[in-house]
Figure 1 (tube, rainbow, N blue to C red):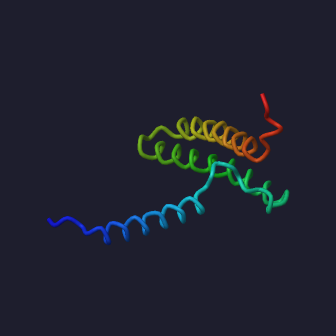
Figure 2 (cartoon, helix red, strand yellow; figure 1 turned 90 degrees about the vertical axis):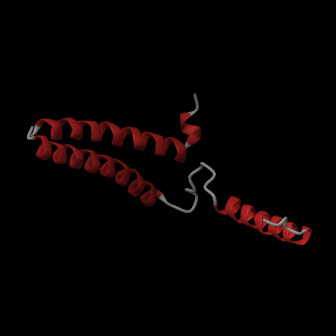
Length: 104
């Protein structure tokens, strides 16, 4: 394998730096961008968080019950687990949306 020429190295470095800048400008910085969304957008986000956890855990419980033949034990367990996970997700999202309200 041949060694790249200095010109090729410089071109590669320039493309790499451009890609890094594009990646950094488009990357999520850990904060929610809620300035553009109103109260309805926030409410939808929180309701989707809790509903998704509830449905995923409930569906998993139902599937496991069908597979193992333990109706309705696992469904009930996973529905309760889904509720707990959903409330926890809503807490995390609400904390990220309003960090000043959750100062320790």
